[in-house]
Image (spheres, rainbow, N blue to C red):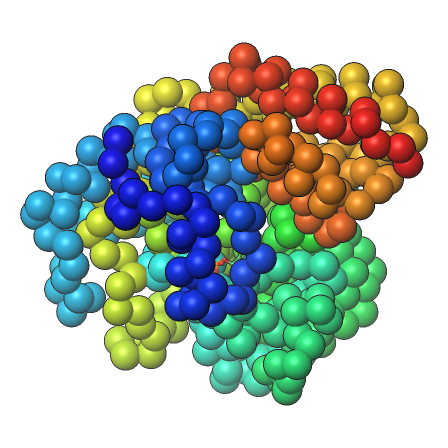
Amino acid sequence: MAHLANQTSADTIAQFDQYVIGNYRRYPVCLVRGEGSWIWDAEGNKYLDFFPGWGCNMLGHCPPRIVEAVREQVGQLIHVPNTWYMESQGAFAEALSTRSFGSQCFFCNSGAEANEAAIKLARVHGHAAGRYKIVTMENGFHGRTYAALTATAQPKYHAGFEPMVPGFTYVPYNDLDAVAKVLDDQTAAVLVEPIQGEGGVNLPSPDYLPGLRALCDERGVLLILDEVQTGLGRTGEWFAFQNYGITPDILTCAKALAGGVAAGVMMAKPEIASVFKPGMHASTFGGNPIACRAGLATIETIEQDNLLERGKAVGERFRGHFEAIRAERPDLVGEIRIKGVMIGLELTIDASPIVAACLERRLLINATHGNVIRLLPALNLSDDLIDEGCAILADVLKSYSA
Ligand SMILES: *Cc1c(COP(=O)(O)O)cnc(C)c1O
């Protein structure tokens, strides 16, 4: 299949060196085509992808029903502004609301924007009562715009960008006492990832989210869940909170929300959402028909193919492989942290050489937080491909010493 320029990876890399700002660390490979959990580079090499689209392509590359929905939509309407009603946005909002907590939706295009909207809504909601402070968790990740970056309690991401936005307080993740201590009558909201992604795939202890919910209720504080990474099926439920028996006041989602098409959403309980009046917040491209059609097709695919159940099974199959590796190499492997297709394997060594060695073997994985291998595979990854990729990973790991 022809791709845009039909040039080599080296040509494209040279073009980037001259014309694209160097704010990303990139692998020296130009990807041109994908199908399911396979992806090809400009030289025709084929890779098994356990990290498709950085978690955005939760149905794999180019899932047929999303491709079809987008093709149909671009022939009807590409974009109309939010000064008009559009069927796809209403239908997508209803589909999300009925699968979550009876929320109302504000659409945007990314995770950071969804969190900006959540922070702004929480502040407007608390304004009359003088509540403006936002509490977030150390090692969390909420995005790169200023408020989302300030909410991201990791000094390495703030360095050089100071001063940050005022009114944020940080406490350790999984520590209810620390939250209880900092909440006061100026606190508007607690913002937390139910499972920390970038921070190392950190799972909440069983009492953590229920405890946060209870604390917020007692102190009149809103609970905002950042489900940008965990949302729309990643954990084997539509949203991670559904694993833990609680309901948020506000929830944000992006990454996998529209099958790989750029989309973000902030969802809020209607009585909270109602403080946003016309003109108070906006996004030009938010809720555009292409993203909403893609999002609807994503939900349909997950339901028709029973992929929430499949996601749980995929996670458990990875767990079996990881436990076997750990049994053989307890010196190398620490905690195994898995919820559906949100998968972390803690190592006792730096994980980045493992990623590079797997790339050599044409297996795409990710490392985060230094020593954690993170996989965000597709919900519809087959058993055969899980076994194939895990055999490569096991092989690579075994060649390292602690
Ligand atoms: C990726 C991510 C974000 C930021 O999303 P962008 O689309 O890059 O702005 C925010 N929160 C979490 C939990 C994420 O994983």
